[in-house]
Image (cartoon, rainbow, N blue to C red; front, top):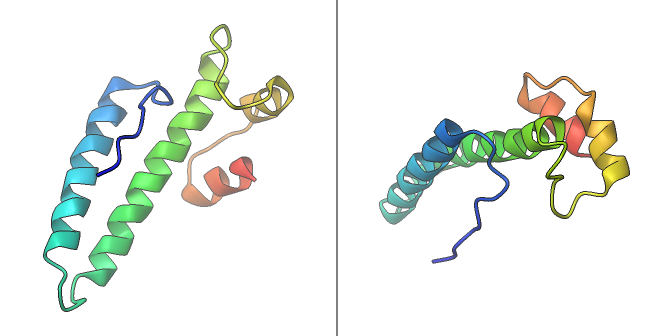
Length: 95
């Protein structure tokens, strides 16, 4: 088990959702001995990544005073003006 600090989460409800989905992912992996649940595992991982990356961007856009650890201010300023509404846009912004 690996503990991941949650200080990148800016929205409490999304944090709860991430914890719930991580538990579902763990359960799927535990019961995927024959690989029959691989597609569900990939979908679950995608949902978790989308929410996590979205929260990093949310913090960069809305937590201007605190800053975002490990993101240079120049990068944070570039992210601040971007619109995110789809996973593809999130990936483009994170590049």
